[in-house]
Image 1: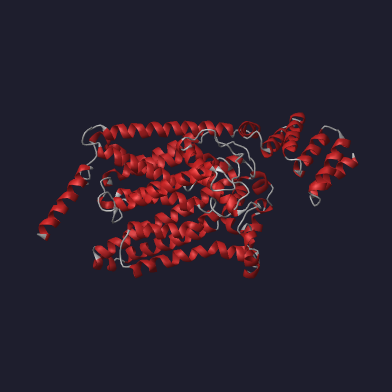
Image 2: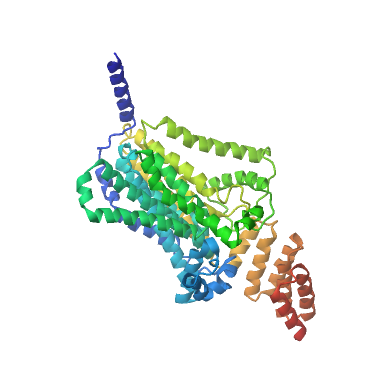
Length: 567
């Protein structure tokens, strides 16, 4: 009787798999076979990348580019940033962002401050990231759980559209067109590279454990390849940690991936993960070195784990519930993008907007857990959707949790987390499409047409957003129109006018900025500059004196005040 009942359960399970079209031996339609070529996929992704960003190569330095690149002595003199590698006697310049700033210094060494070179590097990083997204999906469908998925034969198309969506989405412009945010895209590159290399190594190891053991052992080249892949994964993790702090979550993502997509003896798997896990110490140890002693760090831990703000941690956290929902809205409908949001700060979880946002995020996280549990046996593809949801929240956690940052929202923070969303969405679309394939034979064509249309719309939106970045006056006029109650956009618009010699317009913007923020010494300083250039020296002196009341140690204000007295 028990055997008969077991047979019935097996037949029922097989029937459910067949009902969702899980025949992995069924080839794609002949008319779509050319789309399965990886070469075609790579060329298309590259074409869309260059098409979307073809108008970005002459975008000038903007916003924090001046302070972090143009005015940085480390960028102008690469010796200052490479010398610690030869004679290490202290903290590396820029700490956890050393690799990112080293690339800026290399850019300057080869072509000075010609922006085209900076933009070309940013775009190549973005393109390489899209290809890593593509490989991530392909390799994931070869893991033990996904290689029996209903969508295994669609893995190439899922990878293709995931890469296209990543490379074309207009929300990525801030991490690509805004030069200094190479820190986000480059950290994303090393992060993704580490994960992809680990998966590739793990797949080879899985084949070794389950297949031709004796043959593989005799193949020394095969063993060398395994060792190189693993070492490259660890090294890439180290580079990610030294590019931006968001890489802190990388070891945890690899651990999650290991236990979601692979199997094997626990002790053996833990051994695999130990070297990767040790990289999690790089960023904390960097903070300790920067503060000389661990005692200094721990005695001032509240200052270490925050960035340029006194905002209470709880207020930052509850505000982030709203911010993350805004991020999700931008991923779905990327309208009204803004380089400098005027975002409200919230103080209570019980504020209606915050509470509803919190419940929505709990619901989305719950979907990830539910899919993982509910379809763990019948629909393996649900596993990658769950992982994509977890990826989004975990990779976003460094900048959207309890570590207060002076700006509560920035679009470039979505660069790495967006990958999880894009992959989850594409897999979900193909899963639904696969369910209806039995009834409608053209489902796959309709799906491809729909996704191509979305990609083209997003590419056009990316091109249009890059048009706004063409000059700083246009960029900050756009920002002022979207954040009219915030002082900083008016200040930056004033600087843009000042740089063009339009001093009357600059003064108008600086005075609006001072009306909104009367304690901003830098605005008084630039008002003084505008009067100095106009030849109104008495007014310039007056403004420099006010500026020095707010920033008495500012050398350039003293220098310009001296110039105003001199003339």
